[in-house]
Length: 245
Figure 1: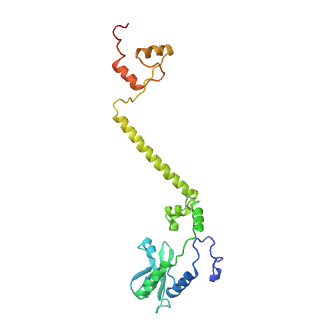
Figure 2: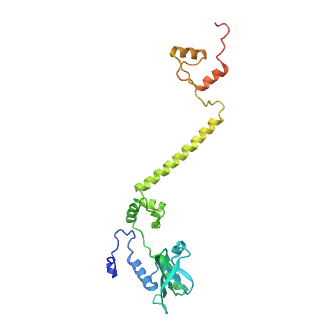
Figure 3: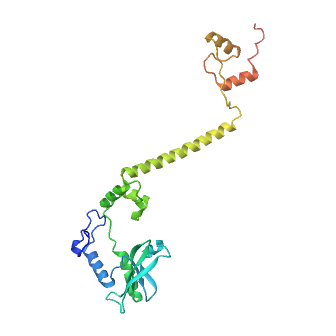
């Protein structure tokens, strides 16, 4: 096949890899652990103690009925203590699995080593990858192992992050407006003198309107306060003072 590799020299590191390179001391520790324990990146099970050494997070999401297929067993442990190689089969895909025979101290040391060599993130490269992945609306960004909140935090002032902030602000404003409307509605329901309708009177002209407003002792305006009109309709115009025509 065209993409078959024949040696480590043929493996070209990805330039977009967001992991920072390990320091010389960290590389030395990684090399020492690799030579001592072998590959710890998959699921590693200690046959002697019956404990899982690495892959704790993986097995928590692997189906319980997934099959372990052993492809090679050794009569004697290898130099790194390996006694079997194989795969965990999930929907036809194979995931690395191996068994070892270690004493308790070596098992615990390997467990620490499996979690100690992750390295730090290059935030700039990581952010660029998040931008690229987020541009595809159908891509589930959480497949990277990061939550949406962590992605937004990494992106900082990225437009996607700004949009999320604006949506949160609008949501808060909408919630506040809704509560204010409920408060006003409650006060209106509690008020005894609130009119729930408008009265529209049509006149042929301003002179006819003035006759109407004078009769009810209302201001001669196009718009009259509903409460005032209500009062006049309930009590009628004031009675003429004694001695007047």
